[in-house]
Length: 167
Image (cartoon, rainbow, N blue to C red; front, top):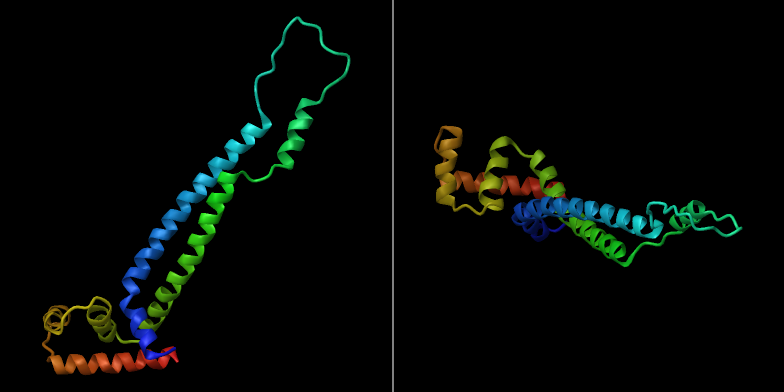
């Protein structure tokens, strides 16, 4: 993987993680909707209704209404609405997979860094915090001062590690 691709993935990490979680929720919602749609289609196809009894005479042939309904249900084709929902779910699953690739790569790279390097990459590269703010937050997080030059050197070393892992 090229360094510019790595940089792009690091910068897009938060958005990819959030988008992936949103897509998960949307897929769950569509899955529930699909289940309800299929159930409604089955009910409509089976035409389940109460038996009407009357004193009227019946024909001499024996009917098999339950069997006929069962056979119709077995051969049931997916309704247009169910096909549309399924297509939406498939499209979202492909999109989620593309987003998850970014999330998985970045999380894997972060595992190869020290705690301070992880913190620095997260603050400066992923979140885009200015070097002045990074320096201030570093002092708060780790209890000692670091010059901007030392932080930049630490970031450069961390990025070299990430580029090596991404090869």
